[in-house]
Image (cartoon, rainbow over all chains, first blue to last red; front, side, top):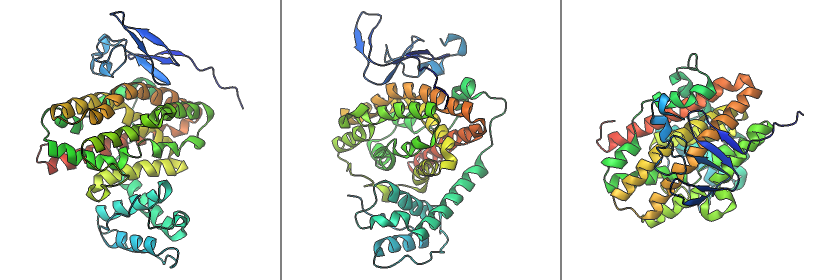
Length: 68
Length: 317
């Protein structure tokens, strides 16, 4: 069996969020801290999420040039 | 405590009778053809349920009764054949990783969530919650069948996703439990399969396709394509559902189930596609068509449910 590839802790999704694996505290634009609660969290990169700092899928309705 | 559903025709009549008579009476050959889609769907749902939680009045050995497995296989072949007949095939010139989300977004089906958001009545939403409960009270379970059938990369990624579905080890956070709490707070029954007799064939077919994809190793990649499409069509509709429930004055517990899915599924849609489906196809390229088939089936079956429910409420789909 080949050795599995190393799993990344941070993943930039093309046109979408940044995935964070594990426990982290994310500070938003207003200086408020948000602790992650799930095994993988998606951080908004398009700036349009209604759940910031977390992604809510809104990037998918933006024109491609406005996506991250 | 799960009770057998009501029969909807000759075939379900025969199968339900055989289930009740086990183990005293061996199952005799059942050759009845389904009378209708309803008859086929409730029979297959019942036979699949033997692999999940079973029924109070049915001997557990019924799960591996050869004649019942033969009926199950016949009905799965009928369901798969109907899906494949409607399927337009693998989309031309699309790259799974690069184009999947746009392909899903371009699919323009009727939306129940949009109706709930702005226009649905309280009774329509209660109808919806009752029939959706057939799936949501066992949410994620059909996909768990796939785990041991995968190479290590997609397997680890699927378990990571399912771990979140199952509440990260906290029973109170299981998605199925969040839905049950919302049902109870809304004055509905939260026991497993309580409303299956109200579910139209289209809802049962959604459940049956998921179980078929999960239970048949041959269709493992379709189970995962279905998962990717399901997650990719969840975040924004879940936000609309939560806002619609608030608009109608439903309790916070019911909206909380949908709010949880806004953020959870924004993660899951990424990992289901990249770490599960794309990773599986990289190892077993021959499975790519099955991924697309499962994803298409998810969208197609939801369209059919949406049309059925919306037209039943007198709303143009």
